[in-house]
Image (cartoon, rainbow, N blue to C red; front, side):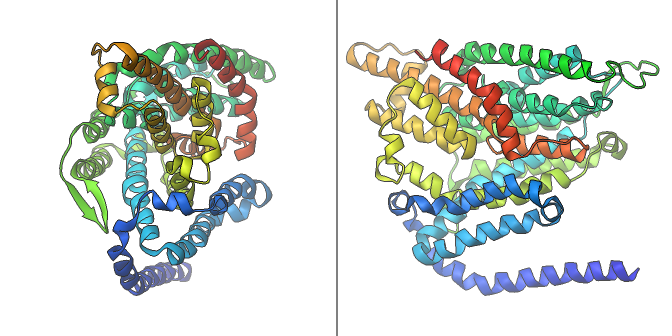
Length: 497
């Protein structure tokens, strides 16, 4: 082994031993905090100051600014930057709030981050084993059809599943193009977000609604605003893609012999279906809970996580390596997402806790002024653009229930078609209107930023790995504000009057 290789192995061993030593030293602290962990809850949201979200803002600004001003540093140290912001938040948080803080940290790791990264990792791995071969030339009509197909698939295999399945074929079809970042941006708009509007399988907020009693097929009524937005965006994309193509040569550099389009690695669709079935299972079964350091986790969630890991392992073992090579598959994008979102999930704790506290928290000025459907649409959407859209959806779901003095069983019965009369009927109809606004706000506006929905950042990472110069965090927001916000204003006036 070379001297360089030896140094690399030695550094790896040192990191492992350092981690073991730190964990050993930290175990007594964990044990002490775990004894107080049951104290966690909504109390923190009532006492945390608004400035406690500064580390969260810090990591977002780091993602936005460092790739522009210090790209070399960011490429090699983004994981350390993410860890630094997590530590800057977590250490004072634990010192100040002890058991309550520990509970919130363990809760977001066990209940939110680990399932998030396992689902993303599973879909990334399985999708990377399916190859679309053949002559597929990225002309405006072909690209528009690909975006439409992905959008239609997203509600049934999830926005992440559809995005991981189609992003590489889209990139390969447009490899000959010079201007192509707009293709990826519209891909994020449509396939990674808006396409997931029709079923609880499509997007996490809708799955959360299903868990809380919204009938599975109730979300199909979102097809009207979804179709409205999709048609506008596809028409705009077609015109924009044609404009950029005219600025180029207008034809692929080398067409060669045409090759029929075919799929390889199609057995991975079984694993893809298995993952979606496991996600649906975790939202329907009600099994006993187990306690992990004071946090109660339903067994169905543990089975889901283990099942998804099994699906990705089976995909790796049964898929020929040449197929993954044909896809340009590497682990770099999922590693980047895992490192950055570990910091994001840690620092987002105060924002979510304050939001959960409602009128008793530092964001009472927002909660107290949300009354009409447009309010719910914009507030849910804007917060979903920067926070986790699933808890944001649930917060305003419960806000609407509370303001209308309704319970989940009453809403479930009504949405399922039970007959109700009188004043109760009026309140239930009002709730359904608000739920409509909350649902499209959470799903549609996840497209506003790279962190608004799980696959957004992954798509960006895969594109950049394939040498597509994607816009920065704020650069992407320029596109979303310029294109999406006017469309959402139209949605407001057409569907939420």
